[in-house]
Length: 417
Ligand SMILES: Cc1cc2nc3c(=O)[nH]c(=O)nc-3n(C[C@H](O)[C@H](O)[C@H](O)COP(=O)(O)OP(=O)(O)OC[C@H]3O[C@@H](n4cnc5c(N)ncnc54)[C@H](O)[C@@H]3O)c2cc1C
Image (tube, rainbow, N blue to C red; front, side):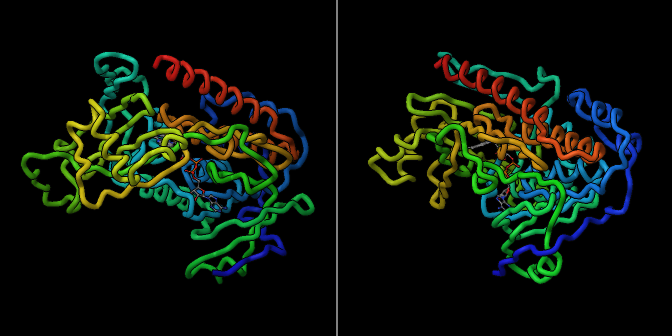
């Protein structure tokens, strides 16, 4: 392990390029995107100053960080992305139909070849109704979502950013961030073979994007507005097959052909929490039980016994998922909605969970992470073009509005129980 303290700034790859307003706008892949607020146009077409070089450092390479870095690079900025896996999500998550479309706009083959997952055709839920309710993805205007393995998915997004010109600094944890003379300077701790390379080229930049997920309280004197009280216990569960299903010759040994897979997302409310289960590429499921911390503390059994006993009480999940696997590995994760007291400021923005982490019930965390990455990248490109160092108040307002809508929807669903 090496601790690196930044002492001189490396200016990015395209630092000598001057971007005119029209060129930036033409280069932006989001120029026709209806989601984007007036920010870009307002800034670009009202200034006449010569723009400064646009260099940005993004901290954290989950979906928000990787997508923001990619969009900034495609918009003409010089971008470094510092990533460390220590707080990364594992297991399977749903990429919503809308998030899927956004990613496929950048890489049409993404879910076919780069990060294959299982297409989710329907949701079956038992949530305040006596009988299960089935919702077909056919009625989603954005189409079916994908259940993906998060490690593979995140790595594929970082590779996509790297291919777009982002300088990806892997296996490196940002320990501290300082502002000196209008530049952000990062102290980093690097592991593995790339430490020497990083040491000779410390990262400094004019703009900072915090994309560290829920772990972002360490930086810039921010705090979560709400205390976490919910936890998710999660595990991979094999399917209860009567007969073994044959593998296709060219499939990976533990992956089943598409037609042998389940394509259903299950959601089930219980008296003490709620379950979800997503299909996995090996034919099994990845299941999570969201429950209060207090409830877990009160249990009178091991975590494994508790998990299995609670799973056995479910009506939807238990019949098709085996909890008897001898190697059941249970992981835990903070699971309630969290908003941070500050989401942007002078020369910096937070994107994804580092700004607002939604309730996992929605299955929209990745979608919101990508949406905020897109809004954030647009605001930064506009600020650079304007030669300004704004507080990014419009960006912060947009995220707060989204968080408030989202909070109301979640409250409505929990209120139905
Ligand atoms: C139980 C549960 C289930 C969920 N299921 C779904 C789902 O099915 N679908 C969905 O859309 N959303 C789901 N979510 C939400 C989703 O996981 C998040 O919203 C999403 O991961 C946010 O992406 P992000 O890039 O903002 O943060 P993250 O995915 O947390 O990525 C941040 C990255 O930054 C790295 N990092 C942190 N600190 C540093 C540092 N100092 N230096 C360098 N790197 C650092 C971390 O290791 C991590 O890899 C779920 C959430 C929970 C809790």
